[in-house]
Image (cartoon, rainbow, N blue to C red):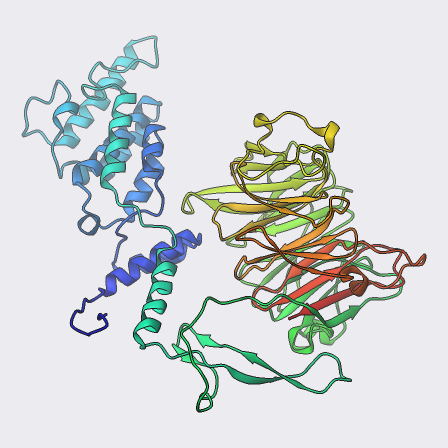
Length: 619
């Protein structure tokens, strides 16, 4: 890379590029991919992707500490070898102290070479270690033997020798090692790869090395066949290839550097999907690559619709749909989910049954009685597609392993229907959370062992609504139900930006951007206190816009970065539903956004409609 004058250059090592990729994969939760790259390239990381080593050590979680340190290159990260040996030693000592003596001896044999690399630090030298020539692993073995002999002869099974942890107590050594880890182990800044790419693009645009993004005309057919084809001005730049996907600009046309991408807001009806007279749409989800829209309906049918046909027709490249052998349930389908790789589909019915399908063949791989006789209201896959999480009207959320079809965990505590359930990785991908939203007005955060960590209760009606900067943890507020309180949380939306945050949308006049600890970062207010939100979604690629439909028939579009109301689409519900038998307004029940394109999907499961519809909007 050079400066503007070209006088100064510096090289970026290929190994550092691999380290950036590893950090990006770890933040994305793709730990197996990161491990494969590390093993095949022989390039270890320069730092960890979280700042939790001190707390891990202080709490005695040596497995997490050693897992994190095992990914590092000691030379590149400049970690003293002694601190790694100290962590191995404490792990062995605490295993023995907890009664796992055989496991402690096995760990000692495994890590003997690491322990013998360095000697004892002065403050941690055991009294018996008077001979510096004795290897550290040998002295550690002697302490394990002393512990075994003491407990065999003592009635108190928790006794330890006086110098078992050196000259310090166990808690003091934990704190000291934790402080040293915090001082010596580098932490990779979050989103480092993305930040460097953005900075590189800006720099190359500034120096003139980046191809300019041209304004060009692109022919696009309007959805209304009565209108003539029209041309729309667009900017297209390929960040990977560094090329402009457009003809050379017309002579005299002004060019300018790449600006921040502005994601267009859908504003016109693009396509409609019509169901049978007595059938309504109950749920829908896009395939991860956007090539199809999967719909579940009240007549028990699952249909995968083709993006090339504006999603109005079925995908005929799937043989079972071509043969009219559709996927189905014996009851209405209330929830659907797709695995991250787009190969598996899960569907839940009103009878509590969850089916898992292979999308390319249409084969039903698993049929699980997840919630006997209770509606399955939400579903999600784990990141690796080996587990499925289901929420139900029976107030529980349950996790099932797809290899055995058995229930692995149950998340119990809500007082009403569970409307949303998600997996989320936190702490740089080293910890798993489960988040559930319910009609009881709360969002609950659980750890992977189904232990409840937090209960979030936003107040979205009445005089004392929750505000930005406040906490919505139930422990931090009084019951405001007499002033409106916390109505049904019908939607919870996880965000990638900002990290470890979600948007909570109750059936009230205010939605909330909150972190997982219950701190309200931002609020989104409907344009009238007499209206309430009934459905919501976000633009997933950029997390720029929040779309929230109201019971008055409009759709509010909020800027997630600022909380400002950017636009209100009037008569939104009127154009997304068929007229009801009594000509009254029909509320929307579902909104979702295309994974890449500015396409918005809306539908209602209200049985008063003359026929079920799904309406797609486009910019």
